[in-house]
Image (cartoon, rainbow, N blue to C red; front, side, top):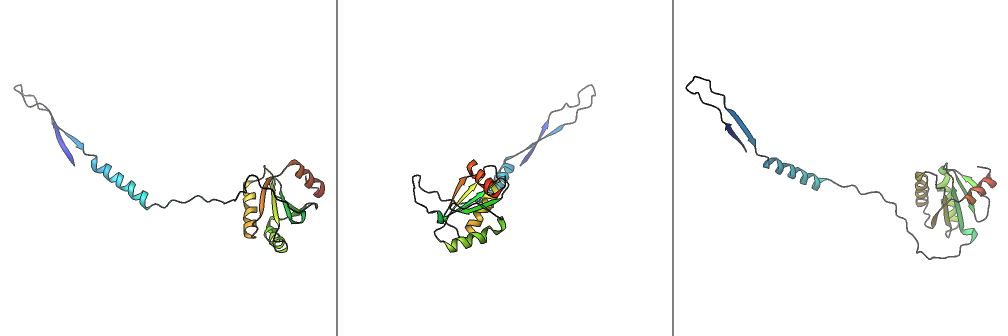
Length: 166
């Protein structure tokens, strides 16, 4: 464990000088401390549960997939920068939709047309949480056929012309 070492001093000589007190040197053995540190480190590594990152699984189609889609089976959701949603079927004029009503709206559309494909166009400046909320609503409404795309300037103009938004 620990040892004591005495460090020299002078003994009383002929001239009657006092002898110096001896200093006691202490040397501490650090080996048991290192053992305990590694034991604690090992204990915490073994007993700790690591949390897995939350991941949203998105299935991507093959790179060269082409399919014909009729206008009646295409639901287009446009999400603006401020989080407002506009929807239309085919070539109809876009209409506003509240985020709170999205799930019921989607469930009704999917029940009416099981082959419905939803295209979500999200503005690049909009919040990421808005897109995640919309994807969650799609999942809860059992919409399995959907695609994501960026909202283009042309789409912004269409929404502005038909709905008088921008």
